[in-house]
Length: 308
Image (cartoon, rainbow, N blue to C red; front, side, top):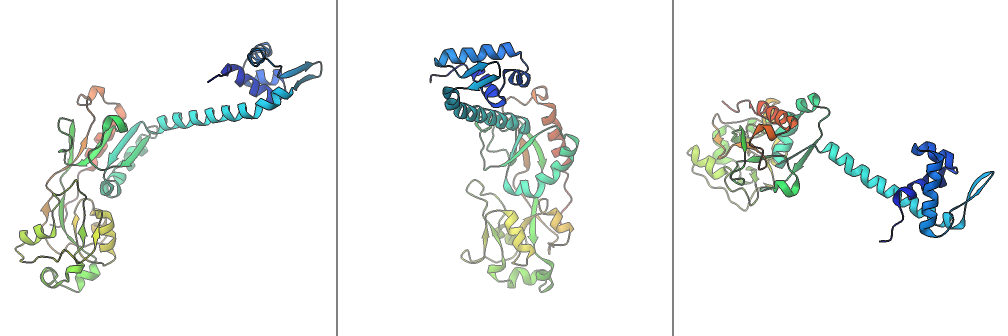
């Protein structure tokens, strides 16, 4: 690309917009002589005068009027792009990646105190499937279900969850727990599809086996949900009973929106944990903000018990 001197272009834009060497000099924080020098440099590059100088001031030539709109738009585009990059860098000091259900049900509440105490620390929360590429996607912290996708990386355990049947109080009032297990229509048992990467979540078959109930659900019936959050919303509205997380749905349980008919719960096969990129095992290479964030998540991971 054949480009003119960019500093001279900046000076020309300011001069053309303000209509004066002196005004442009004041805006740019330089002398009027420096402005005049840059204008002459640009005129020499283009081979055409851009201003007619006279006792009454300066007047833009035809050449100046021709190039001014394009140069002004180009500078505005450069300024806009630069601002976006700088703003992104400031806001994204810590990029945190997690699963949708964890983000909705646990992470955002856990970050409230951290954000209040670290107002100057930018956070970007992203929802991704495992495994993530820390380097390519510039991720500083991953909250994952288990660490099996990240062998050899630094891991901080957060909490170990349990699941138990959960339903709306209105649904439970119509049935006792034994009737729910044996007589509730197959379509009222809500199913959760965890995705191809996760095949180890407890299922209704696991629950029935654990409580000694000889029942198998028809896989063709009922509603299947791509995530625990959507299934919980349906359960709260009385759509059926879900096998739900005691930790991630603790707020709904505490508020009485969901109730647990049974006293027992099945442990999840893996804990939720924080995974760090390669090279951050030593706390000395972690930023203070990242260490504080890990501390906040670890404290916030102390979970209320589910059904006793």
